[in-house]
Image (tube, rainbow, N blue to C red):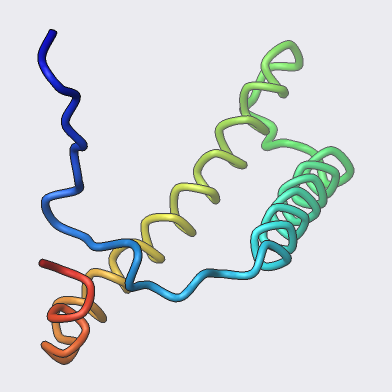
Length: 97
């Protein structure tokens, strides 16, 4: 039976990164849930456009909330692409093998 080999990530050495406190993750999840639930409740109270049929109001709300999520995530992704594509090479020497 062949010996098992350990497969390491070819790009990133995660052991060199500083650990992120767990509270940051919990805070991010809580803020996201509150924001999108508040947006959904706002849309329930505000109403939908008159062009939307009464049986498709839930679809409109779902699409609008999904669109807002996509705008936020897309903006975040593109901003990090710009930040890390122009960042100092020291970061890449530490993190990337």
